[in-house]
Structures are given as structure tokens and as C-alpha cells.
Length: 310
Image (tube, rainbow, N blue to C red):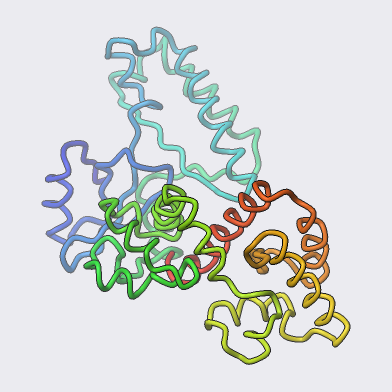
């Protein structure tokens, strides 16, 4: 087992050699992850400082095996529930023979293993086994990272995530993007921060930039590629004459009342649920509907980023 617990410089030094199967010098996550160091793709299998018997030897640590056991069980319950909800996690436990091996502490580990074995779909593995599994099932995929782009490139790539509103990407770029923004979730957070912090007039301009659902632009095939694909995914490109007329009437009434097009993340819906939401939301007051439209814009942006980033 390769086992490091020092500084980021140690990680870089170890990774630069390209000889380590994995590195454990990280407390960053509850899952393994890949890091890029020059031409080397390094697997990181995170360690932990809290579910760790070293706390028997530090101030404000564990005073008894019972405290250690209860902490491990609570940690396991939380991560197990996340797994049951569709997001499996890794629980790392730091053990040292000279610490947990003491008679008054070892019983905690024994009881914890008994507790874990009462649960289904749990794999107790070494770090090397975890590393081998991750390499086989989640190999690294290099891509052009948003945090490494210059402003021009960034805006060119992500300026259309918020419909025809490249200023959102421009403002997000000023937030000092890091590797944490190189995923769909991370970059979505940055873009939404830029959108939410803008004056209401600018937010309104984004709402107005969105096309009507099944409107004239769609019929004339003048939508952006993203909007065309999104509307088609919900069957909005294959409306009957009656359905098209219904949407046209609703579009006109909605814009007249609220001052911007009806916006909904169609990839969350089908034709029937879109129509139902349209007929319900058209009755909202202005502030309520403005807020809901902004939420839908952000949801649309999230889908678009998931098409581009991991």
C-alpha cells in the first residue's frame, strides 16, 4: 500500500514519477478521483482524519473505544444512505496497530465490522483493491478544462449556456475559476452566481432571449441547436395543429402578462406536463413567475453543461 500524508508538493513529486498506482495524500472527497500532473494521470484515493484512530492520541480526540465506534457507525450510516439514494461513497478508516490494537480499543473495530456486515451491498476492500476497481471502471478522460481557458476561449465555449447571453460567462470568468469548476456541477455553480448577482434588468434580458415554445422561430427552424434539440426531446417538434394553436394562444397571453416568454426545462417534461405547467404558471403574479423563470433558465443551463462536461 502506498501511503502519503504530507503536502501538495509531495503529491506533485510522487505523481511526476508516474510509478505510483495511487496516492492517498488527500482529504478531499468520499470517492477516488483523478488528478493531472504534466503528462501523468494520477489516481487519488482519499484518506481521512476524522474516522481515524489517531484521534486517540490527539487533543479533543476519542477517549474510549465506544466514542470511536459510535463515530464510525454514524459516518457509515450517512454514506450508506447516500449510496441507497443513488450516489455510492467510499468510507476510509485510518488504523494503526499501536493505537487501535490496544485491548480497550480493538473491540470497537470488531463491533463496527459486525455492524457493517448487517448491511447489504457493502464492499470492504483495501486501498489497492479500490484503486484497481477505479482504474478499470472509471478510467481517466482528459478534456479541455474551463479553469485553464483564457477569457476568449471560455466565452466561446460557454457563452451560449445562458441563451444568447455571453455576459453571464464573461462575469463567471472573473470569479477566479479553479479545478472545482471543471465539472458540470462546478461550472454551473459559477455561472449561476454570475446570473443571480446581476441586476434584474440583465436577468430579464436573459429571459427575453429565450424563444417561445413551439413558436415561429421553431417553425422557421431558426432556433439555436441547443433549443432545437431540447424542444425535440419533449416532442415539441411534432405537435398536432390543435396543439400548436393551443401553445400559440398561451404564448401570446403569457408574454402579454409577464413581458417575457414562457420558459421551462423541457428535458424534465413531456408535451402533456409542459402544457399543464404552462396553464398553471400563466396565472402566477409577476414576481413569482419571474423567480420561477429564472430557476428554469438555470435548470436548462445545467442540462447543457452536462452535455459538455463530466
